[in-house]
Length: 367
Image (tube, rainbow, N blue to C red; front, side, top):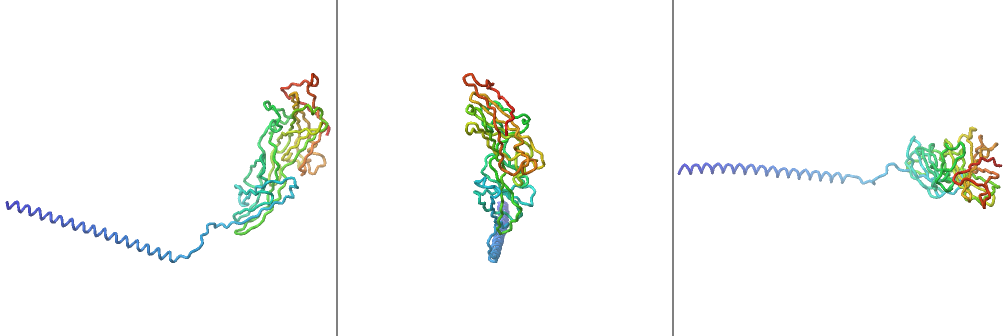
């Protein structure tokens, strides 16, 4: 029995030692955790105190969000170059940085004819301007003022003359089949300014003088018989310019045809009036294209006729203002005398045409 008691005593002694060791270990861990928390609180207090000292020593200043300091620009338009022939609803102004070869311009639309204001970064610029109240005019070469070009989309004789029926293609003048047909341009005035500088936090004024970038052609044919029997008229003119450059007014390269409508005035007069960019871009060098006028007629009996006349001499008259015959006059007049419009079949009299096809006649009418 004494041995049992001694064994129990040894076990109790060992358990007591183990409990003391665990208590000591837990005590050290608690002390270490408490010390860490104290150290963290001290660091936070030091950081907070340092921030208070830093903020109290700052000097307050207004924030500046725009370090570029834009310049103010006033754009005015001088309308002497238009000669009272246009009163646009507004102008688009494109600003090009003169230090960049190719770029996307800064665009401002300015309502009315008085101009407007713009804000630009300090730099040297050139401005290009054109009226924005157009529907048929398109633009290309937007990367700089020298390449900025106005043009119209491709069209057809049927669309331009507005003649019906449109199911079958209408004939072209001999030798003009290779010329694209384009839509008639809207009235267009445009120009580019000289280069100018915009300074930081300063204002200045720039004046742009627009010029007409189109011409008006009026074709008048008198002494036309049997107009009372006609249903519809239309026309086409070949050898025209496909486009015009905004800055210089130079015509685009190539040769196109335009189609247009016609109106009967009085009992024996036929009038066609339409706009073109111009004709013959190399006329100043003495080179020009042939200009063939085609007149289309649909009579009351449904027969279809077309007449072709060479009117080159009227677009390039001798003694005109510039070599080659094209001058700066915005009006071009073509005058013809007589057109052999047949009398349709009435009670068995008159011509008996083939209704489904166009009857072509090349004429040499008086001028």
